[in-house]
Length: 220
Ligand SMILES: *[C@@H]1O[C@H](CO)[C@@H](O)[C@H](O)[C@H]1NC(C)=O
Ligand SMILES: *[C@@H]1O[C@H](CO)[C@@H](O)[C@H](O)[C@H]1NC(C)=O
Image 1 (cartoon, rainbow, N blue to C red):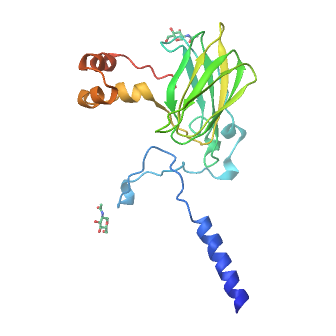
Image 2: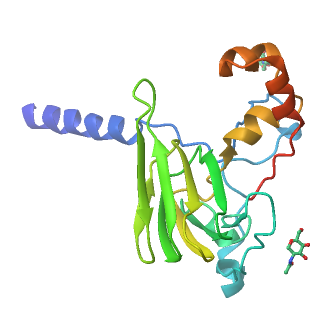
Image 3: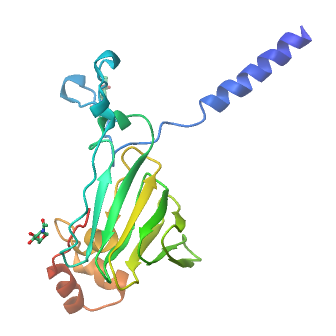
């Protein structure tokens, strides 16, 4: 009696452990609907019959990114949209090319931690911790150096060298997502009210107008 009670308790502890989390979203949101005929499949993609999978389902060839743009950087994602075989596997990567002084501007990945290795050049990188500390943690990276950007935190990479730079970021999601801070705040569609932005950034209307008039290049 006693041992079966213990077994039951242990089983329930394990069961509640296994059910302690909802699955993490793999897209920005998923509004529930009642009518399944009007829905789409989310949190992953439909799966191909495994017997029909081929090598090309797990393959992609990354080219050098074109850095002739206002940021001087180009991110080439290799995620589930590029390699369909990544579906459900929780991993992806990105190649980032930098012209001299090129910047991958402050951004966050809502669904992934990033581990970055520099293949060529010198990068000044950093991230900022959550409120209220907002501590800036930075490092200058050279060829072969690796740095981690924890999930959700705002981070950036600047080419601090004289030549081009190349880095590869590994990401802990098949669809990490990118929110570039300037683009989201000043380049949203439609625009965020200047009542919001003047107060939030402690600047006057003219500055907000000016920022909202800029073209916010998306290097992804
Ligand atoms: C969904 O369907 C249920 C059952 O028919 C109904 O009670 C509920 O109000 C519906 N919810 C919405 C948001 O339409
Ligand atoms: C790189 O992008 C620039 C600006 O869009 C374009 O003019 C140029 O032809 C591109 N270079 C290559 C090699 O594709």
